[in-house]
Image 1 (cartoon, rainbow, N blue to C red):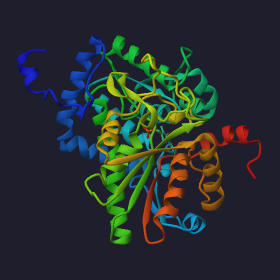
Image 2 (cartoon, protein in one colour):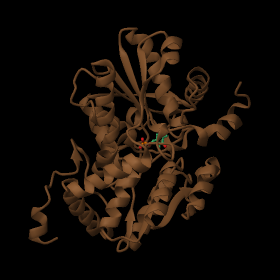
Image 3 (cartoon, helix red, strand yellow):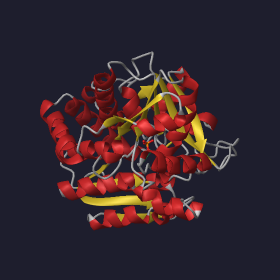
Length: 402
Ligand SMILES: *Cc1c(COP(=O)(O)O)cnc(C)c1O
């Protein structure tokens, strides 16, 4: 990098406390620096930002609703429950907020091709969607196990013209799909933009994804104030890589009185290999170009993650969450597969909303918190996505859903 360029970068940029940074293979350095340079410019570019806002309003259907959940409030008998309805976005989850933003960036950079990794298929779906709309060649990497679990999303991606490439290495889930997408990017960086789907990866990705998802928190703060005249006492979101949570927290992190909770996947049990509760059980390490908490064994080997929900099945976590946990500003908890499945059905039956299995983890925690806080308090839950994609899998797992 020449001197002139170096001046544009702050060495500490991209770190959240001791976490984050850029630990990517050398072949990606130039692409990451280009991305950082372009993003810095676009962040302040009024025309670009207006473009993003227009698509969010007219294509994604934002602002998403923030509404009171009367039945859950009554059923749980504690704090008042409020829902931020990211499930009502076009394509059914928060992922589209980031996909739209990054697709517009790719267009601005003159790229012809976009690629992405996906676990639950929601980010693949969001990327295939913007790929169709903006006319990119689109390739989605997905673990073979997830392809089986999320067949409907795979069909949808193909319908919109994307190529879905199965990844059979290792556990054949999100971690391997991410590695494969990074490999593709390294080979094709000239004409390809890699739309990272969560607040993970080397700098500047965690910041870019956070900024595009911060619309969730910004809207929520405004909507909640308008509806109640106050702020929520607690905000709860599920954490996989951590993008819906970091976006939601963005609206409240400066309000010290608002307690923030991230809920990870506790899986089958607390043994390594059986959960995805990275913050609770992880150790510092390096994964996919960033320094963060990772589920690993005593020799520093990454241990495969497990969760009933494909979207939480990742052995790392966004570096900013690792920092927020260390600093204590956000508290992290976990819910097991069984607890999430039971909350999934409860939300369906009580509130008439089919939530994503990912979000169901947050609901389980919120139920306990509601009892603890009592009737005078308000809890806001980020309903990150809808559960249509999970309906068949839940039925298969439970046998009976009555
Ligand atoms: C992908 C996904 C998640 C997990 O990803 P984050 O980056 O942690 O938000 C959660 N909920 C839904 C519905 C998802 O599709």
